[in-house]
Image (cartoon, rainbow, N blue to C red; front, side, top):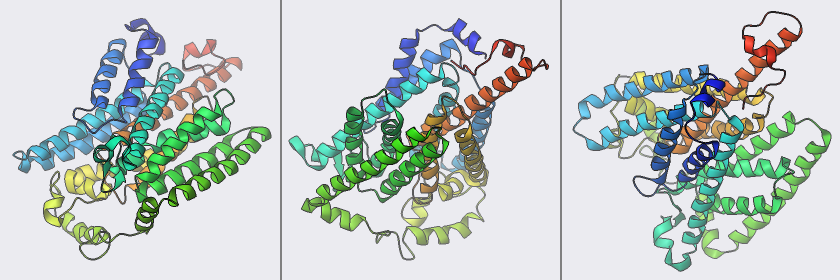
Length: 429
């Protein structure tokens, strides 16, 4: 659907649309109750935007196709376990999350700047709420420790400290990018928010989240530096990066000086834990389960891995074959490979959305690698990142096509899209 057609069909004002997406982004930070605010906000956003029409780019079509094949594999694997309510709900949630990813990829195709802005600041606010709850809970302020901690680690408004730590990373990356490059926003406010998010990541004591945050921020800074034109801005990035590392190191030392924090850090900082190693540990399960899955076209079935190996796989790729069978497993691997291609391609596309693409892809790329040690297939923010990556790819491709057609028209050559004759810049609003 063209942008003009979408505007003509719009039934809600841009402000209503903005707040609907903001609520969806913010709701992602509060998920320790069911149904969570995220589900309610998504339902609202879906209703708001479906009325005006959604634009499906080629990337979104590929995304929905691979996600449907992936979940169809799960549906086949579910057949012997229809009596298991948890297994049925597991596959239902998989379908729901796939819909959220496709929705995100489609919704940002029109009014891209405004809608990305709404999602961004919604996610930042949700992360600040979640991190603040985690910090207050960890230090048992007002007796909140029993509500916002788990296993002695900050869980905030999540059911799992690992998910808190990982959810916060995209907003933290976006704030870091703004601190380095934006001259319009107040750096003091951004820095205050970033410190709160850093506290949430650190006090979650999630080794995966720690590594994820470090590598995502480093990748964002590196790509922003390389793809930014202008020596002055590059110097700013270098100087602020050095200052930021110093501030974070000072804050980390201050936290570690607290005996309780230092003891937990020493315990969690090792690369492996007792439950990781040995024949029955996490990594031992991988090598023992893989040969069995080669003889099981339907896998073990949704959520059935734990009945064979005592715990869940804690490896999203192994879980894809275990819970979704060969069909789902191959589809998931294909989706990941295709996303790797699309993600790097979207980062290389110049335009107004390139900085956002850098932040999103830097976060998702590291999370894809993190999938080797944890199950990410039901993380709401994973599907948010997935939808954003494919949606940004479609925006970039369309902008490139408009530029090519406009250049051909100027040169007196025929163009595929007659509408491009009036376009001299890639305006996708």
